[in-house]
Amino acid sequence: MLLIWQLLLHSLISVLVFFITFNMVLPSLTTSSIPIVYVIMLIGASILFISAYIMSWWASYNNCERTSYTDNIIYGAKVAGFSVLVIGLINYFEFLRKPFYQLTGQNVKGEVITYSFYVILGTLPFILTNYYDSIKNGCVMSMAEIDEKSKELDRLYNEESKK
Image (cartoon, rainbow, N blue to C red; front, side):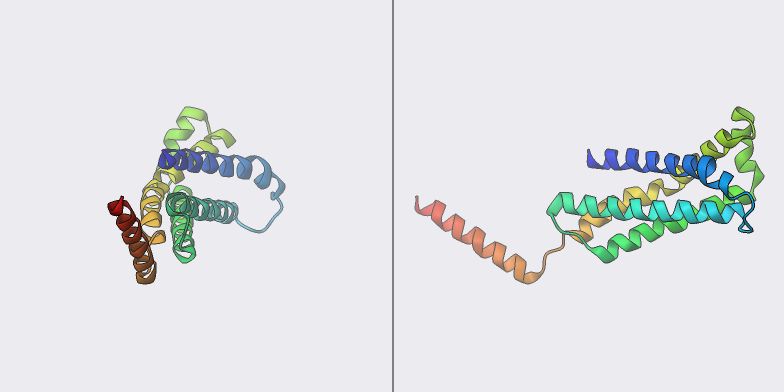
């Protein structure tokens, strides 16, 4: 159930990032010398890095109340890096944008839908693997912890067998 919520949250965050970027940030940067695609990449990668980091932390902490912070950073960087790649491809190849422009017209709504669709589609495999890998790698116990838990279970078993 948590995985479904994470996928929905990732989709919602992606749509909101591009909606806010195209409707609020880009109109105020019309006189800037920075290319628009770089602004889109920077904002998209930053927010998606944070959301992927939080989702990875949430998955492992919800499962075993521990997490691997370095793995969370790596998972966030994967999602951010691939989102930058997808944004670059969308900007470079016109044929990726054309179907959405035919449906919605070449306007802000078409841009938001185009970028959101491809980023969600492109980062979905990373979100799925991050979920399971963060649980697997974040919930690893050391040998000392295993021995401690084993002794505790042996003690409980011995108490139950005496009854």
